Image (cartoon, rainbow, N blue to C red; front, side, top):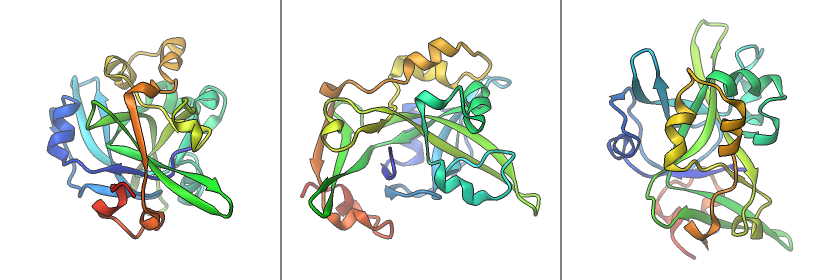
Length: 223
């Protein structure tokens, strides 16, 4: 799974990385993004032909949900279930997004402890998780956009710590993934594989990151 990650770049740098022409957001970079936080998200408006950078709540709230608390259970969506579970089927078909990240955390169980590790890419300062999103309307009539990070089986590097990992899209597949005007199930599913382990790095970090209240560069410093 992916229960915590880092978005430490400015909106300007994220926009530049993903060729975003329209930005509708104002957010502070975070070293310790936690479920229910607002996160930066890239979508493609095929009517206007532009990519947009905005914010959404992390934790998918299906449009038919009775309560937004269900989002805490849907911070991740398994790639194997996207075409089966009602919560994921429609978003996978026409509500796909990129969730920019600088790296992500996983915890290794050792004796009675959970040891945090930070994973990032060697040659890409910013990359995009494959994501899906939906719009939920509260009882007060407020629109809440929320998203989920798609996960897959861990590669050889990550599996030393955890058996699942977030799907990191290649640069070549990002635009196809974002274009919700097209839908080729087999093509899209082919993108949802574990990232090449030789292009990633990891190191142990301090338990400081264990608390979502801690949000500083100390979170990603090697122990």
